[in-house]
Amino acid sequence: MAEWLSEGKAVDAAVYAAIAELETPTLDVAMRRLTSAADRSTIWFGTAAILAAFGGSGGRRAAKRGLVSLGIASAFANLVAKPLTVRRRPKRVELEVLARRHVPMPRSSSFPSGHTASAFAFATGAGQVLPSLSAPLRALATLVGYSRVHTGVHYPADVLAGAFIGVSAAELAGLLLDGR
Image (cartoon, rainbow, N blue to C red; front, side, top):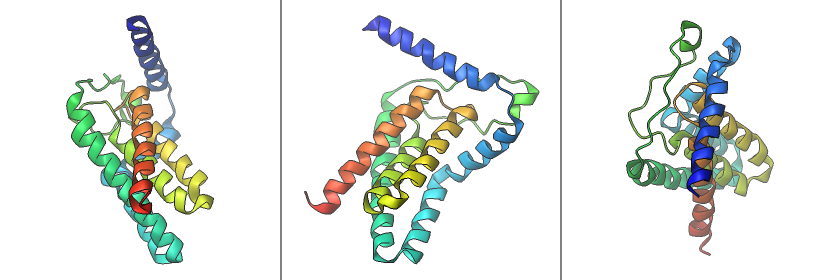
């Protein structure tokens, strides 16, 4: 088991390094903007507001399910999981050409990605109510997760763990809200 963990960490670091070394100026701008839009779940609160305002009763139910899911995921990721782990944030390459992609480095543990947990929680929860939105919301959640690696604040495994927490939180929210 120790060998698997060691090799898994090596793969995680290698994937992070491969992404960090790419020169992608157009993508850098987009990923910085997207990751910033996901700060404090702004993008998800905005999406919920649009769903509630223009989506009728289904939109209001989807917004509620998405936000309850997000609340559960965010609380678990930031108040339970992060304090229990001590994973350091990635060391970023400080080349001038790559520095423009970076966002401010959070001070919390790198594991798991709270942005990704919130993104997948909202996308999964809202998508459970409005299946036609499931694919586009999950695609956006996936891009938010990738943006956290691209901007140098998370390793890929942090993002995978965040996605797992988010989907699980949405499942729990569904059980709580549906009374099952």
